[in-house]
Length: 151
Length: 259
Ligand SMILES: Cc1cc2nc3c(=O)[nH]c(=O)nc-3n(C[C@H](O)[C@H](O)[C@H](O)COP(=O)(O)OP(=O)(O)OC[C@H]3O[C@@H](n4cnc5c(N)ncnc54)[C@H](O)[C@@H]3O)c2cc1C
Ligand code: FES
Ligand code: FES
Image (cartoon, rainbow over all chains, first blue to last red; front, side, top):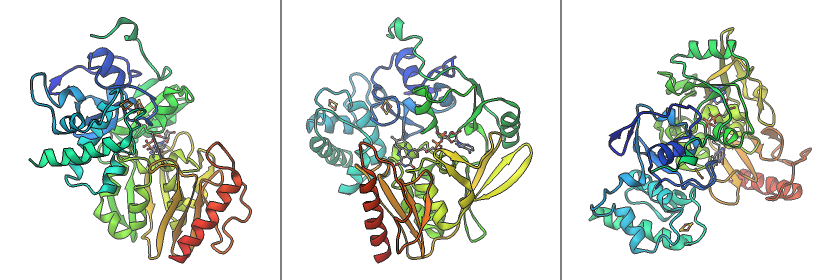
């Protein structure tokens, strides 16, 4: 499987979840794991460009596919991805636990709706839980990301 | 780098993993293996595995089967094959044209990120009583096609849902296709849930003059639009009492038929 542009072997054990494979076998701990049943969204990664829950896929299922994790959005030393920059500017994070999942979901949302309506923004982040920042500033961050992408 | 103690972090219980390349191969696996489960989108089955609420001996992953992801017009309605993701149905022009009821119902199923993996047929096979799509299939009078090494059969929606998480599918059968009749106006789906994308507390589907309810019985049920709550005994939980669910059914059905 290709993760952030680098080829990696799939896990040997089919019971290994994609989220655990990314974190523990590849050391990509930016992908967080919370609920492990699809509800919190913090494990969201891109599978061939579409956001999916990495806790609800077996690692072996990613064989032959392209995975993008939060680490793949902007390399060290590079400017932040517009969605990351927007979260930074709008205080879209506090403890940051939920942030990688929000960012990957929003990247997917904006790929589908480059100019989302307020309702599309609400629905686009409804599948992610944040326990501390509050959703108002996250919503603002999405609107800011729309502006930054347009630049 | 990874910490040692995480190296053996495995949530699902032990299973043998099979990746058939054809429907034929999948059916012969399902026919010969004992205690096998089909893995489609995994959006219901993998949570059950992670919690170890399901412990199948074998997983038959159908995601590698080619040419099982078509949406096409059939018999005046629309057929959706087993590997069609819910997101593909949401975006499908064919579905929007022939069965707009299905297009709008899909947007109530979980979130887009879940719909990117979850399949329509998986939702029907899983038969969660609070699920939207089984009620849509029932309201429209649709059907599914089940295949096994023994042959193929068609099962009408009103014969398919038999209990909580229980369908008429035999353990060796693969659901290969669901067929939704064209939806005629007025058709709509209404539900009440805590947040957008959550499972519904109760919901109604109106297809022309037919009414189906979900979230209020072990399976989706057809009901009389003039007295929709008659005979229902919904369960209660932290989210809603039985009485509240009955109230929702009456209010939502009224709204649906006032439209
Ligand atoms: C956070 C979250 C919220 C959700 N909210 C909703 C919601 O609001 N409404 C809703 O309806 N659903 C909801 N779901 C469930 C989601 O829609 C699932 O995608 C769907 O129920 C199952 O489809 P799947 O393709 O993922 O099936 P899987 O999880 O792969 O399988 C589910 C079951 O169906 C069987 N199965 C699957 N495909 C076949 C087949 N072709 N032939 C025979 N058996 C088969 C499997 O063996 C398994 O028992 C939610 C899920 C999550 C994680
Ligand atoms: S850990 Fe995957 S959704 Fe919560
Ligand atoms: S920033 Fe703390 S959970 Fe969202």
